[in-house]
Image 1 (cartoon, rainbow, N blue to C red):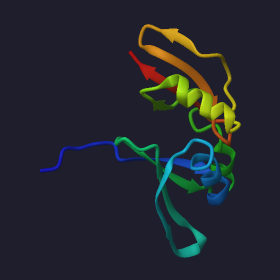
Image 2 (image 1 turned 60 degrees about the vertical axis):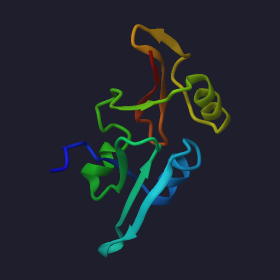
Image 3 (image 1 turned 180 degrees about the vertical axis):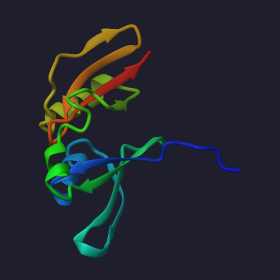
Image 4 (image 1 turned 180 degrees about the horizontal axis):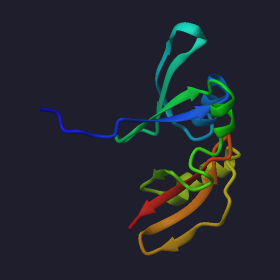
Length: 129
């Protein structure tokens, strides 16, 4: 029997290609799947690599979902991008125009800095101790 795991997290986006430009182009994620569905929808999955969960980029459908773009967790960090080399990834993300809300800080659990995705969702870039 296969063990259970969190495979994907759905993230509301305005436009599939716009989101791919950010997650693949600026964060360096890999496109895992882009399948056309009925009604103009697509099944678009990206991953930072290295195993773990993937993001399902879900185009918002209707006013309620559109209003939640960029606020899926009420302004709290809810996505955590772990790295083995914080300095390398922080520098590369800055060079690609990713917005960081703060300077890197050292916490008991590791080095961390909050950045924003294309829609303003806050993420942690973190290198664990």
